[in-house]
Length: 351
Image (cartoon, rainbow, N blue to C red):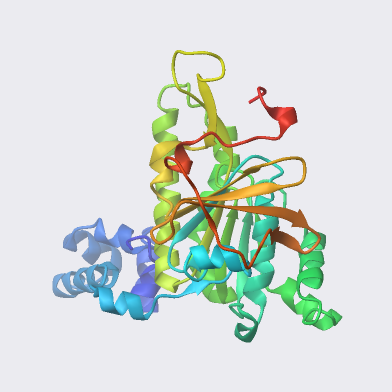
C-alpha cells in the first residue's frame, strides 16, 4: 500500500533522511513526484531517481497469489466461544476487518477486553502469544476489568500475579479523543505494530469521535467524513493484510428514517456511519438486547458464515454464550444487517 513508510520499502536510511527534509516520508509521497522532482529532493542522478521510483512502485504493488496459496495459509483468531468460532470457521479472520456494532450496554467493549486477554495467551492455549494495540476513543477501557476477565476466564493460567502483570503489560492503550488524533495514530500504527510485536489491533470505537465532530447536515461535512473514514478503512485493511493480523472495530447505532408511514414503520435503528462504511468491513457482528440480562449476537455480514443468531450474557469472565456446544440457530428472513437493532425497553422510542 502506498502509505507504507519508505524504510519498509527497502529505501536506504540515508535516502530516507534526505527525502524527509522535503516532507517525503511515505511511498505515496514519493510516487506522486516526477523523476526530476525526486532528483532534486534526494540528490540523485536521473537514472538513480528513476530506479528508486521503480523499486518503490514494485514494493507497494499487491503481489499476485493463487486461491490455493490463500487456502493453505488461511487462519483465524479463536474467540474462545465455540459456537461463534464454528460459524466463522475458526474465529475472527486474520488480514481483515471485523466490526462489532450495537447499542450501548450490549458488551462491545467487554468483547474487546476479552479478545485482548486471549491475544496475549500462549499459542498452546489458543492465543496469539502477542501484544495488543488498543485504540480507545471513548475512555471506556478499564484495566481492572481486563484483569478480572483474565483471572475469571483462565484462573489456572492467571493464578499467579506475574502472569497477570505480563498480560497487562502487553496491552498497549492509546487514548485518542479527536478525529485528527485517531488519524495520526493510524498513520504511525505500522511502526507501533512492529515495535510492540502486536498480533491484534482494536479500535473502540470508530464512530465515537466522527459523530461528535461532523455535523452531516452542514454542506461538505458528509463528503469530508466519508473521505476520512475511507482513509481509516484503507489504512487498517493494509495493516491487517501486511501483518496477517485481525483488526477489530466497534461501531454505534443510529436512527434511519425510511420515509412516510406510521410512527412504528417510519424509522429503525441500524449501524452508524452509512452504507459506504458498511462495505469497508469484511465481517459485521450485530449485538442487541433480548431482555434486561440476555443479549443476542447476529452474524450480519461474513464471507464464510451464514446469517445466524447466538444468545449470550455478560458475566464476570466476559462473554458467555448459551448452549456453547449446541447447534447454531440460522437467522430466518432477510439480511439481518437491514433489520432493526433491538434496544433496551427503557430506550425504545428515544433514539
